[in-house]
Image (tube, rainbow, N blue to C red; front, top):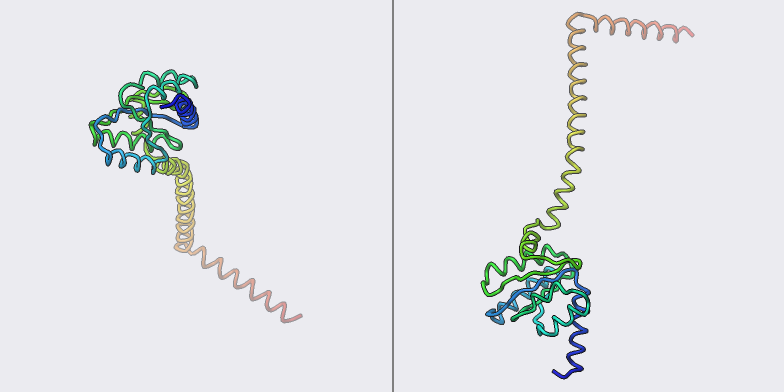
Length: 197
């Protein structure tokens, strides 16, 4: 590579590293072209990309922008996964791919300028998808409302049962029929006084 090309390549890598939400570095020695294509396809769906870069240039770019914690990973054939959106989805893809392909070994990474160990990347991969977490949060908010609604329904039902029992008791004691007869008498006397006028 001509010196000017190297300088430009380092600048491009600096921009790539700085624009990323997260980075994950992994050794890919032994992967076939079709396996790399499959990885790229899966990562693209997760909002990430897998880049094979020249290690000396990547190391220089990381040092230039203060990402010294990455330099230890730039040895051997190392690919850089640049995550531009949700790091959880990309971590899931990487973990699953490394399970299915022994040649793909995750080394570590970076998230919001903080180093990520392999264990931390695995923890990220085990987090439930965003949609599921949002559904659980919404369910948590709805649970108290459901309890309030059920409690209110129970109170109304109990009040209804109590009122019904009171009416039944009054009917059995004959109190309700007397009330109705006295109401009928009142209506009849009112009607008569209206007719006289």
